[in-house]
Image 1 (cartoon, rainbow, N blue to C red):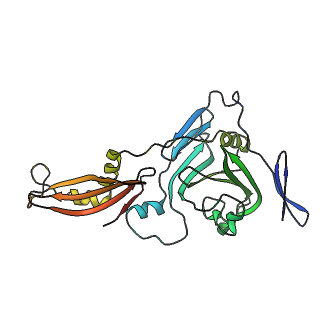
Image 2 (cartoon, one colour):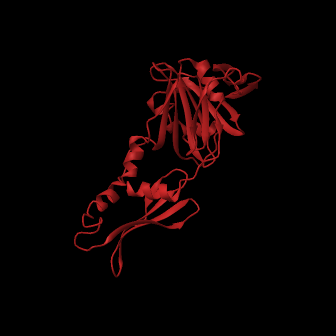
Image 3 (cartoon, rainbow, N blue to C red):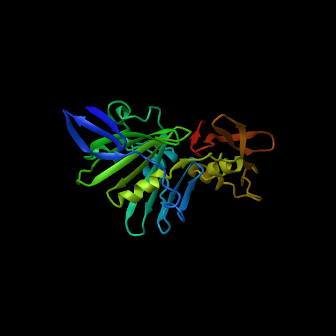
Length: 278
């Protein structure tokens, strides 16, 4: 295979035959075209993107794999856990989506789509489900590698996936089907990274307090002043220490002469991801 760069983008050839169509290099949407557009801003994962007035952006939250992991349960299969899926539409049809996955250690390059890094596992451009990649294009947004994969789904519908990483290394996949592609490309060109906002100590405590097993533990404190009905102990959820990636939180019962630990949790200050360490 030979890739030839032109002013319009990159073509891929196999045995001197052009594969697929040209993918334009991503350029900034002129200000007058984006005038009056709204802004979707995601401070947790550090990016923002503009979209036409009247379009709808909605978050579906973590996928079922991530939700299962958050419950402390084991997950089998090869569907990748994602922190969030943001769908944007014109009110009638889905125009595209943004999926935010865990940290991706490999570089965002064509070779890592299939041969080494298995990028195809993330998002809808998955060869296991019949997706046929046709054209690869490596561009840049805000000095960050952007790999675009264009092809056809098993239903012979055009499908594009755009892969890049945020400052924390989380993989972000922006994808669309062949529905108003010009508008999607304009939206994609407005994507930019912003400074992420760290989760506060209070927010980290709230995250731990809302864990199913912690909520169940708290439900036993039915005595006066929310104390233990037989022990008289008081439930405590406190930040024990700050770490490079987040907070170490101690969940325990405070008794008159000692403490009884229920659990220890680490909360990532960027993503809110929680891990039990007890």
